[in-house]
Image 1 (cartoon, helix red, strand yellow):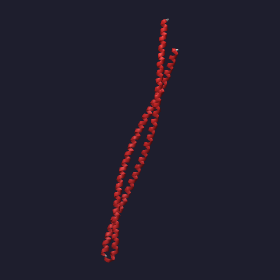
Image 2: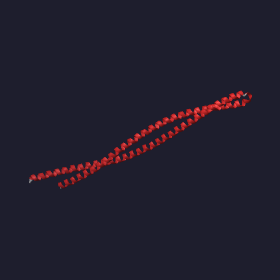
Image 3: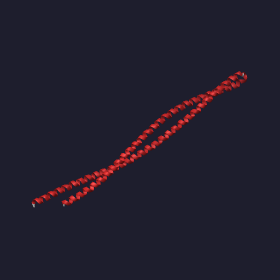
Image 4: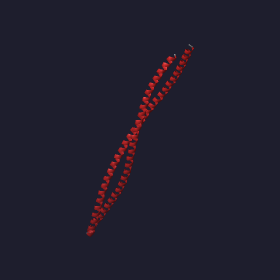
Length: 209
């Protein structure tokens, strides 16, 4: 009878120890569950931030594309102005020749052509001024075209950098989603473990009683 009592006491002690360690396990599982849930929440927040970053990058890309279009239009306008200045230059050259010839003819006419010679000289000076202005415009246009080309190059570089950022953001977003999904799965699994531990705990306590 004594041995049996000892065995029963031993079993009761072991059962109590089991119950205690199961309670500790349950507490630990609870703690992990809370941490996992918090990770899932943080992952959700991170996902939100990543989405906003993607939106900003996309908006910036639109601005960059608009800038590229605008620069293209400026280049086109510059080309047209260059053609016009070319025409002005040509007209000035022809007018200069005509005025020169008119001056020669006026000189031949002697006194009768004096007034005409003055007009021819003025026309010639005007033609030369037009040619000079056309050349200056051409220099300015060339300068502005060079600036536009540099700007266009920079804007295109910005565009490609933004495209890279955007694709990296997508990758980050996928990782964040994976983390969120993993956290959710962990949370579910831990809840399962938790209820099993609780059941065992109840059974052990029942045995101890």
